[in-house]
Image (tube, rainbow, N blue to C red; front, side, top):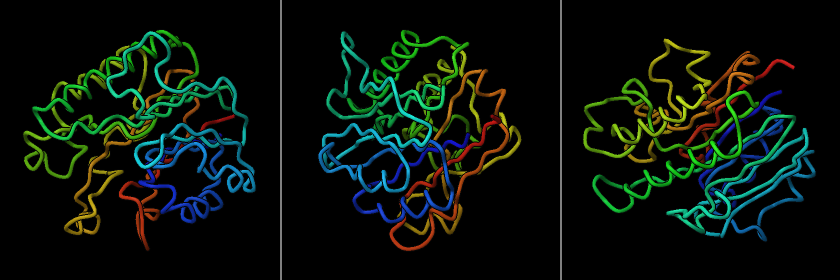
Length: 260
């Protein structure tokens, strides 16, 4: 199985690029973030023509998550569920599915904007909700992947210059602790499993200042997997080519292959 995650920064603006990439990369499962579409305007038929079942959770204009699969989609749920006070209720930031025997939890974690701010506090609250959601619906022995745009660089080596980010969101100890808590629960950073010693291989580059061409990026798109999935990991890649060309997203897709 091949699965991937990609913050496309507007599916409406980049649908052609996404369709081209699907035909090129041939993922069995693709988790998409920041579709910026409503459920009514999501291009279900276009993806169906490429052989993908698809589900979408989005209010339109902002945020939005979608999961595409050609190995089936069942057990679909959106948000944290009843009884959880989501600090970003209505923002459409989580979509859980069962595809090919693996539970995929597709997330678009809030940005946090600046430190300190109410947005930063709500980001940390959102991580608390995510932990409670995972702990309530899965066990570390289950085949599970939480993947998407986490808006957190787990380590200093995941940003181009730690000094440039001092005092900013995405790198603060509480944010990194929130990711580490998920790992302590029983999840492993799939990228680091495959490439434990590779520094500065990024997934995001700001549009401004020519950051992509200067290799000034961050690794903020993650795939956290339980041991049953980690045992099947064979290969992974950040597809930098998808960040090139006309009207790219500011993120590149991250792809992983699993043994059957």
